[in-house]
Image 1 (cartoon, rainbow, N blue to C red):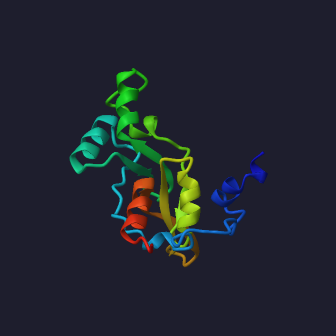
Image 2: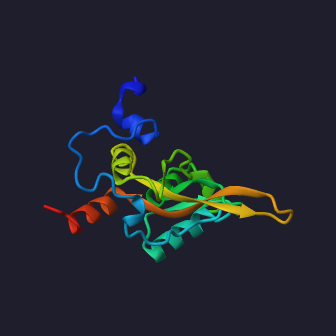
Length: 165
């Protein structure tokens, strides 16, 4: 069951300190990773255009974010191509037709240990940062902004470049 799985508990924010012998990088914050700004697609971008953009910019994946800032999911080059080739989507369809809506989010203040637990099951995590925004009448609300996309390779690169051993 999930509630006795420490890795699931860490990934979902229920448990923080489980490893007795943590690696040196375990408690370092995600913000220390040298992440590049993400390429973000709006939901109305067509599958054809998404493929072209991803290939031209050299990305394998990109978050799909509504104009309101709501994170709708992640689109990958391979899933988009395979969906079109299998006939499950058309080149003219909006990219939301091939968007993964199951994804993990991690904050800039979260630890690399938590990120490591997420990346054991997921290929990537979307790094988010919460911002307070105010509208015209002065009321405020919290909005999540996509700060980046992090993969196991990003974590491995950080650890190997900064290895303390």
